Image (cartoon, rainbow over all chains, first blue to last red; front, side, top):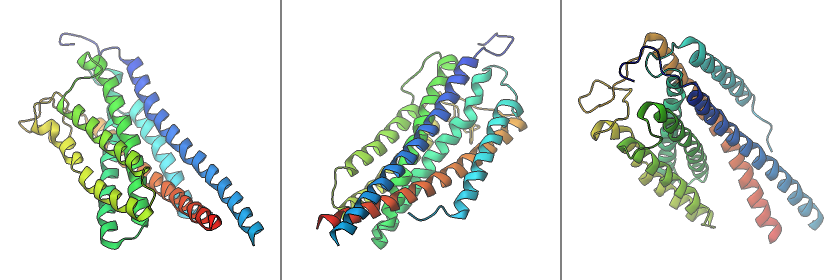
Amino acid sequence: MLFQEAPAETTAYMIAGFSVIFGVMLVYLTSLLVRRRNLLSDLETLQEIEKESI
Amino acid sequence: MDPKPRLLVILDVITIIFLLVATYMVFFYAPMEAVMGHVQRIFYFHVAAGWVGMLSFLAAAIGGIAYLRTGNLKWDQVIVASVEIGIAFIFINIITGAIWARPIWNTWWTWDPRLTTATIMELIYLAYLMLRSGIEDPERRARFGAVYAIIGFLSVPLTFYSARLFRSIHPVVIGSNQPGAEGSFDMTSKMLQTFLFSLFTFTLIYFDLLWHRLRLGALENKVEQLKLKTMR
């Protein structure tokens, strides 16, 4: 790269980088939502069991 | 489950707006770097992700000290939430660094001090989550987690200073004129503005995610307690 006249053509690497950044953030957000949904479903079931046992 | 607090809704909206603005600045406001080309744009979020990772691990260490002093299990939730967020962002930091390195250093990976210490730091905190999941007793799990978060934090300053203390080819952004810094980094004012804005935006993302993760932790506790109650 020492004697180059124009910037290096690195667009594909930039796209890959931002895909990782937004991809990982999206996966983490989705994991929070899925875990919350599962916990709410568990909570509902447990509350029903509790009511039945009373 | 408590309804989402109004302040959290506001924080969500502000964070999304800031992320959109930061993304706009990275792609359209900051000029293209003269040698590296477009791949340099990764730098703004790469460093910001590294900052959030280290901030998360600092918060986990503070949570560890607070738990050992008070014995309040809420601090255990702060530790696990922060570690989880920190792992995600250090993962982003490491992978985007490797993507940047391919065209610039002509290799995806090299065992440079900064890259090595960052990987060790990531593995230390991954081990925290794995070991934590193997302990049933909440009090014991919290005590172990608190001590681990404090000791594990030693890897954070080691990673931060590794590019300054050892011979490293990794660029040094803060204090690049130090004699130990091999790869200096000069920014134009627009680049600097974009960089600082990205750091602030990612800090907002951290606090927003932390709040959401703490709410999830509270729900986990509620379900765990109800499970114990119904099993009796």
